[in-house]
Image (tube, rainbow, N blue to C red; front, side, top):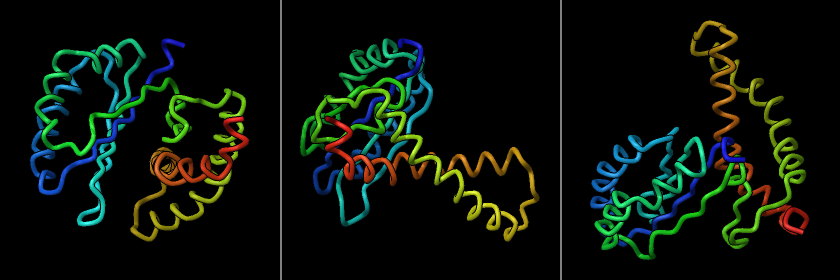
Length: 183
């Protein structure tokens, strides 16, 4: 279980007029995070200008231990203290191992579906995407005169599938089947 990787999903609700300050703060914390032991990658989902004020940061580490070490480190604690004046709500995060973050419904707290349900839901979501995304993406690549290359086509196709899974499909799909999934 330890070596399957770990993710943390952090949400920061930013006060009006503090987005620029928060962005500047990100320029400080992101490099510090990237230099932490076991760091793999991070993604920042920014708010929609003049519509939302929530930043979502997804950080992946190689092990739960390395992730917890970063989240509980003095460096991070000090940087969070520095950013507190920008937050509507306190720094909020949940640590998940493997792909559990895909099943993280905010209203379910730390409840995670059993593994066999995670498998079935993930498979049933990826299968149709893996059939239809190449049918849409490959003609677009050829339209832009990008030569056919099995590896590049696979890279782009899988990137689109993962993006859709994390940001579009799973948040909506898990809400739709929530009763069965968390039963």
